[in-house]
Length: 123
Picture 1 (tube, rainbow, N blue to C red):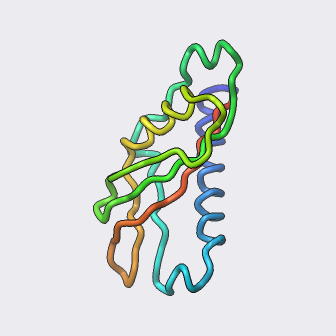
Picture 2 (picture 1 turned 120 degrees about the horizontal axis):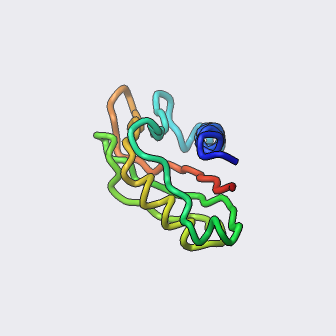
Picture 3 (picture 1 turned 90 degrees about the vertical axis):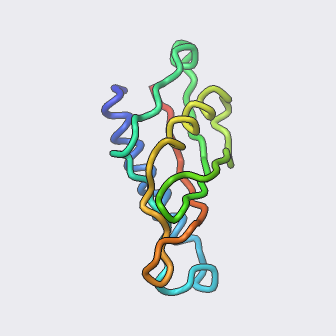
């Protein structure tokens, strides 16, 4: 799969992941007027497939969590589910932590909040 197609697939998967994260919250967990933080893929470079992992044919999906600050920057990040390949996990995390996010909103004001992102590695 070309890098352009991989990036398009990532956008689709990330959009689905963000939608699923919002759907998974119960009304009690997400008060009315609250919006989830969203990753702006145009704000950063896509993660580059590590050469050794690509050569070995390693693929997988890594689930990441980012603490998005009220200004849209990333304050913290962690890997919630590994792809099974630490190099793929770390590469995705290190690249996406440099992205900007549309911050979560509560009562019309940006707030700090954790958000989930999945990155799919496919050759």
